[in-house]
Image (cartoon, rainbow, N blue to C red; front, side):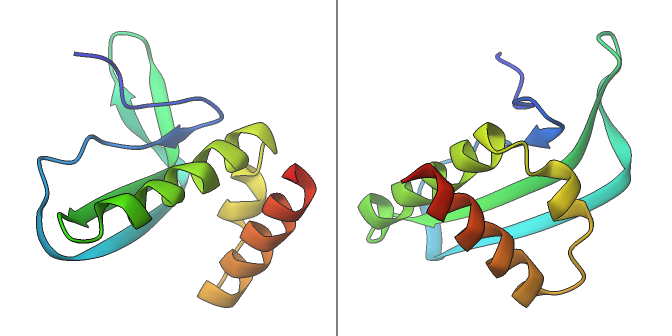
Length: 100
């Protein structure tokens, strides 16, 4: 298996099929980190959990563009400082705006 810890402390665990009734993303912010790989001493600070429905699969793939943008923008610290969904949206829009 390949590690689901990308870089910059961002983890994206693999989804287990397209069994969800609705596509949903849950974001976990862990300022102190969560041990992701004990052997490599890797810590995850921002974890995106995805449930993807079969009907929304194509549209859901654009979510991955946002995750890649967060990596490229090194947005982990900014994400960890967000206090609300509005803060998260501002960071996402700002990151996506610079990547265009």
